[in-house]
Amino acid sequence: MEQASVIKKLRMRCLQGVQVREAYLIANLARSFKADIIITHENLKADAKNLMEILWLGIRSGGVIEMAVMGDEMERTLAGLESLFEASLPPVFARMDYTPAAVAAMSPWAALPENE
Image 1 (cartoon, rainbow, N blue to C red):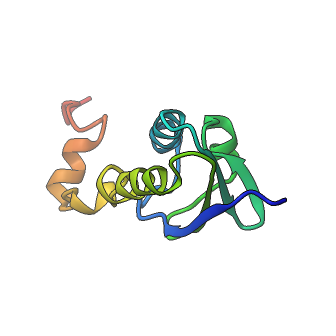
Image 2 (spheres, helix red, strand yellow):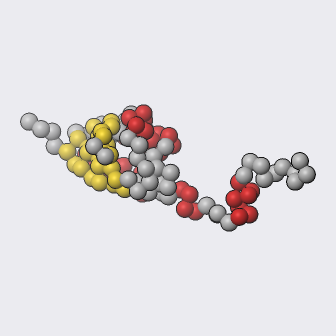
Image 3 (cartoon, one colour):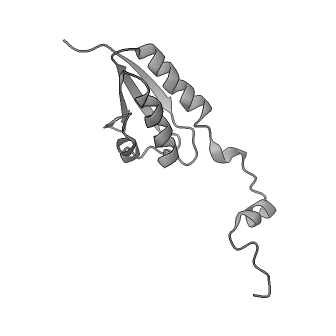
């Protein structure tokens, strides 16, 4: 008998895609639930409680993932993960200032004197 599951498709909104920070947030939250959570991206599957498996998926900005939640607290688990994607994984760089002066200030060489 196949175990019941709840499946939800989500789009990655972070401009940098899933990197270590994002994978950590997903895995850390997933570990707080009893349910089993499988993330599928481009025919690859990962345990959402495993940071390395999430990174291995190579989820880029705009990429669509499918989250399958099975076991205890399915609805609560899915709601928590959805809220993470909405609140904690926003398009981080969208709010940055890309004017020439701001970009120069971000440069590690911006503070060097011009005569050196």
